[in-house]
Length: 381
Ligand SMILES: *Cc1c(COP(=O)(O)O)cnc(C)c1O
Image 1 (cartoon, helix red, strand yellow):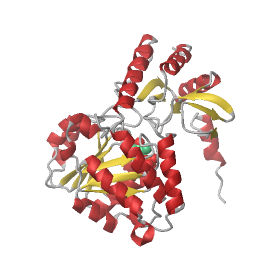
Image 2 (tube, rainbow, N blue to C red):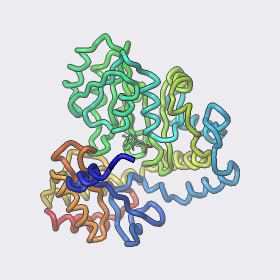
Image 3 (cartoon, protein in one colour):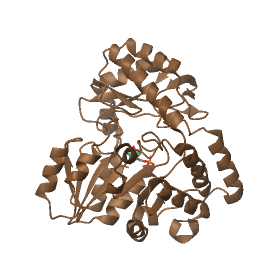
């Protein structure tokens, strides 16, 4: 084996070394991590469904019916009636002809972009899109152009220079590290539909935005103009997996050509069955969405009073910018000493000098817990 020590030492020296905590019990604000009780503000379980007993019950019943593993890929004999029913229900929810389930959001993005584009095509991506979308562009071998974050003029100039090229314009719906929402209506005005497709990865918007929890397309009322809508099931849905929603032709093309769909085992059918219950809850969870909004307001007001450097985010992702990786790590450690778990996000996940604490809120947090977070942050303000 060749040597790996140098890289690991460098990671450590630059405060970029990543480690894992071992957590026990269910995904909820109060957890045991590394054997210690902690109050966490770092999960993507925005509606508190990951430990919902109704969804857990569905999973248990479905295991009795389907067993554990799916046993094969969807195109062999791994595609169960549970997967099929979930796809149909998600298609209805998203107002699309069809939906295709993928095992993860990462794989959905890889599969979609590489199935639709090749070497002579183009990807035009927001500068801050999720890592999986950049990897997807790479895998497709299409040329990749970035535009300034959420900047419609910058997008327009990229499009103008490449008007005749077949392309996918890709953006997160809610940006995973900044928490802001892509300016979809203005973006849509710039797009020539004849040779372009708009792909929106709304991993963090589903369940959180919109009256019915349909995410940024409901927030802006622009569902019909998003050609390829991607959602993940491991965040607000509280289960696992992902889906692509779109036209009949899009989904049939993916079934023929998306390699991360074809060459992998289908998710366990019981997970699909549990997600059907999750979807029913999520659609009618406006009380949870309202609670979440009120916690967001409470946090932002408190943090502003402390003079913390917030971003312009209306979502449960509330970054506090601190600058250097070193400072972000020190603050995250300091909070941990007070029993509060918040992730330090460092380059390369975010641009240099914008290392941050990424605070995420869940409808299952209480006002008291948010107060506790604010008073712990006070010591760093
Ligand atoms: C989390 C996330 C993904 C990956 O989804 P997984 O199901 O966790 O693989 C993709 N895109 C965005 C924007 C995400 O936040």
